[in-house]
Image (cartoon, rainbow, N blue to C red; front, side, top):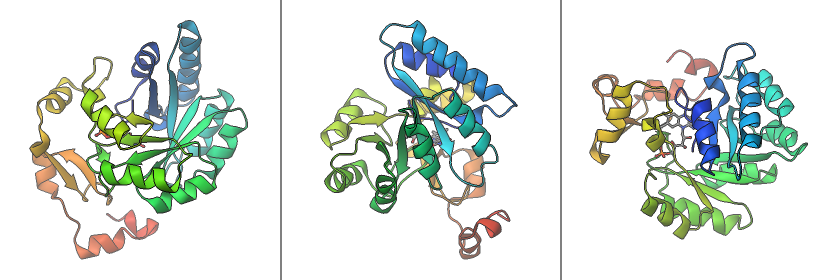
Length: 254
Ligand SMILES: Cc1cc2nc3c(=O)[nH]c(=O)nc-3n(C[C@H](O)[C@H](O)[C@H](O)COP(=O)(O)O)c2cc1C
């Protein structure tokens, strides 16, 4: 169960573990003082209370734009979080810290260049973020990115992410060479997610033609439901916006 900002929560992690899968949540979903540490302790407690549990992990944004990165990393290391998914930035520090107690680190990658960097830092696996992924998406289809990663890095496990919501979707990712899958959007509609019912209904009732790729939310191509708001802000950045987006200081102007 993939990490989703403002969606993933403790209850979803507990259900994931009780049902034998690996759930992951962004640490930034718990931003109040001391909140994350408490959640991690409760999750560790839940994990040892059930027979044949799955596991849980956290998603850390390893970038200067995350003001809680240092505090959250310390909480996670203190509580020996079983696994991490890192996105954006350099995962070196997380990998070294997690490996000190046997924690695993999977890095979000969208191309071979990112993957080579993560492999050189001893990442334990890749989350191959492919075309069609909910939120920020990669440029390559699953049928292309997974075999390319497996050819270049045959010993590094790959979880495929992007547009998987059914058993046949899982099988197609495994057939392409992935060891596992990372599913986000489908779980927005689960009972435990504390998002509005209208959001859950939109996820259930939307089809492929209701989803659009927009650069205008964060600068990075992002798959969203084509709501009136998405139509209002538009889908493409103009030349000036693209230029502002190339630099972390000017990016704040957008
Ligand atoms: C609402 C939403 C929020 C997301 N937030 C994050 C996040 O905070 N960090 C992250 O690494 N990935 C995030 N993702 C990406 C997911 O972890 C995962 O890669 C993606 O959902 C897989 O594609 P799918 O939604 O088609 O299953 C988010 C996805 C969605 C739909």
